[in-house]
Length: 216
Ligand SMILES: N[C@@H](CCC(=O)N[C@@H](CSCc1ccc([N+](=O)[O-])cc1)C(=O)NCC(=O)O)C(=O)O
Image (cartoon, rainbow, N blue to C red; front, side, top):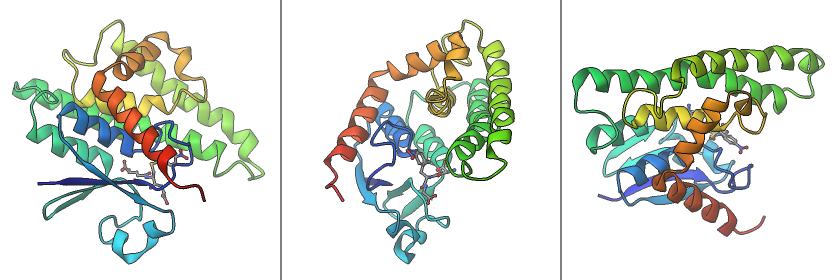
């Protein structure tokens, strides 16, 4: 059945891959699944038709037959659970890979999201300047812990898994701040993710999609 995901009609980053449809494209490319992309404008996201798919009026969403999913992590887990090569067959290894998915989304992404908010959404607040260093240090602290755990390993737990796909996707968002490069082993880990043919196809597709959208 046809898979359709939603993406920004025009991503504010101009197609630099920071929007969360990129990680869904990536998992679909790793699984070798064809998919269609429905662009959604910021206003359309808040209309009933899209809210019926995504209660918070966001992207990405995933539609396949009568299945509708939202939350990039859940979409990635769904695809990885139904296609080989993204979650280990061994039960304990599979559970650890899923643990890393949760860790990426629940423990690593929140301070990074906080930093993005501090730099963009909150930047005009009177307290923003004072808060920013503290928020950035929380990201540094978490990345320092992750860096220590990863060491010089290629992936987080043996072979590449959906846990790495989510973690690399999350860590990519720290590159613009420069914090990722303060941890050379994490920067190299992210680069290994970006070097994967499936990621390259996903990135190229979202870039082409964004540049093909008609100008406002
Ligand atoms: N937890 C959800 C979060 C979804 C989410 O944050 N979606 C964002 C796009 S990805 C986050 C994002 C936003 C903007 C950029 N950018 O480049 O400017 C990049 C990434 C969205 O729809 N925002 C519109 C809205 O909330 O009204 C998930 O993982 O799917």
